[in-house]
Image (tube, rainbow, N blue to C red; front, side, top):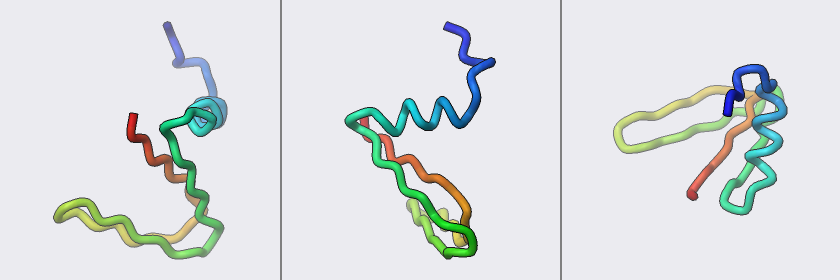
Length: 54
């Protein structure tokens, strides 16, 4: 299946509709922080974060 012509927006919407996916939306200028092990990201939105555990 070739998904290279599917828009990123459509891919994110499809993934977000799945049972094992949590979608988090960070609004413009809203700060967020993600820490995984030793790696830490501090930034500001806008951004969409997908947490996938399937």
